[in-house]
Length: 302
Length: 228
Image (cartoon, rainbow over the protein chains, first blue to last red):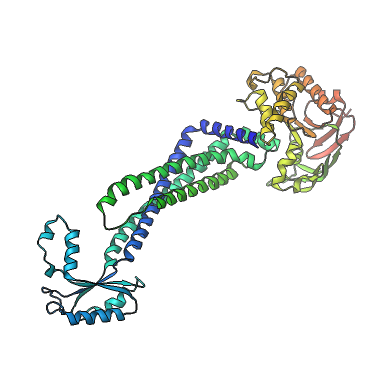
């Protein structure tokens, strides 16, 4: 068994050396296509991360009228009895999980904090900012239940689903993901073709060996193993490179640039990166094995 | 050892069969010449034995195995019991004599300890003692064929098939190769040799099976090449 292993690895090494440029090409295409695939997976994971983060938090804001409101439902600031009535109506809506009230003072404090250092903050007074009910829903999809109940009600200036703001961001990210999946798909096709072609060339270069192996009764596994392992070696190195690319994106792009500047959300952690790297490695490995076996069946009748 | 039962082989797209209704039996321990002109069906006969092709009709039995009905995964086991030598030798040019012989054992998973002891013994047996480290191109044609014979014997087959093994050799070298095959036969290996060489067949006086146009036209116990 052990001597067999040494023999096979010797054959693999000979094969790789014989077609080094080809092996390098296969390795690089594996690295690029798996990286793109990994990026797509990471963007998807980030979208889920943000959804989890945001959909659990403030979902729907019901803004009350201020002094300066111009909406037809408003006639100056919403008075306290009206506010209490509205709160009661909100609690009566089936899908409402919880509701909190944010006063104008609280809204002001939050605003100042958000825009600290910006000139906007200096010109705002608490009276200009609307008080609001912050509502979480048992089912985040059923925003309309709240909207229909409260839009147009006296004392309510506007009902806003904050998800819609994020949905635009999510659309953007999903578009990004689609793009990287598309490129990854094209690159994977290239990878598969290249592996198949490499197998064909390798099978041709080693046709003497293969014919002797067949003649002396080597099993199909023994004949195909060196070829398949060649592709596997390329896939493993390519996967490792893709893993490094993904880790670099996490370390330098996400942790280095995005996280410090975009504080409104959380970002994917190392666990997601590890899963993505492992997943694309598994896909790369499978592609290498399946493609080389199919190619060998076709080109070497081994 | 080898039984052909009413074997007919027609290749796809051919009108005439390459072999037609061949019935022949070869016992273990025999030495048999398979003779016939080019295109007489000799190659098809040999290919049927190692399951390169399957019979269209009839059965080919080697030992207890119905060769045409073997599953694909069983074919390697059949081939390990048959040593094959070709006219064009088919050595690996970048491996030494010893490596060429060892290759046949390595690829069927023999233990390296066994390989280390058996390879030098085989090289010595075919008369190439001391040449184990040479590359094939450093050897004469006869020596190359001896390496090929050593390789064919590497996995201790019960049957040795030689397809025109002397076809490219001069008469003196041919005699040497034939002596070697006789020794191998004397040690208990069944030998089936396809040949054009009338001189050899006439001299050796072994069993002769002759094919002509795909038909068995002669099976003679102590035959000569042409009709005497």
